[in-house]
Image (cartoon, rainbow, N blue to C red; front, top):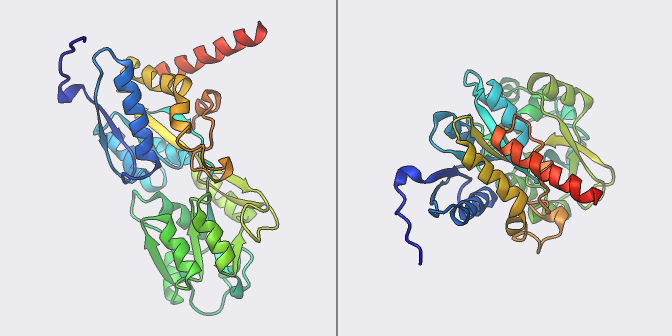
Length: 329
């Protein structure tokens, strides 16, 4: 048995995930195990729970953690550049370590009895509407994304309030879905589209999925640079046409320039060498219904919305080079 000096609290890698029982904290656990196993001193980690949204980026900016996981990945440039919920808080030192594959979208859905085909149609609706969406505080990415869809459709909070509309906000995506399914809302805007909650909504209620219009897409892209994804026809019961929706994909594994090269490289090596340990925890689910879209391919994981930490970039470049040499043999 080899004796190693007991690590101090200061030596521990500090990671932040989501609320504790979900995917981003699981990601932190995978990385913590890898770091422990791959370091001679068996370096320990401290995993801090959070919300996996704006709070992860703010924790990095404050130096409270070394590595944080957040979703969607497409919002990382907002934190770097000080846009949207990060206005006045630009963090040019933000760096990426990886983006894990997570296929998701922010989608508006309406009760079919309203006769709406897009959110823009709601502006001309007679009478008040009840809209259920995510929390609207500065860290609440679900609420911010929902607000983008509304604003892009020409619907502002003051105008909606004047018309007697009611906005109900929730911390979890499933509560908004349940509001529409159970008749407490007329429109809901939510994510986590791979979960059974969306299938139940489509089968237990008469609903219409509302695609992003060209106007919404331009409004959002021009101001925040966030793009779209296409949900294929048939993904939900009753979805007969492909649906254009706001990009809410990717688990962003982030850090800052303060992270030492050795640790950044070690995290990237987990993606290259140990990804099946993480992916294997989801393989019992069909890939298009899994929160993690396995396999984890280091070539796509290294295509990040903000600059990679240079040590992580070197690991991915070396892995790609080895694969290229193997292919030529």
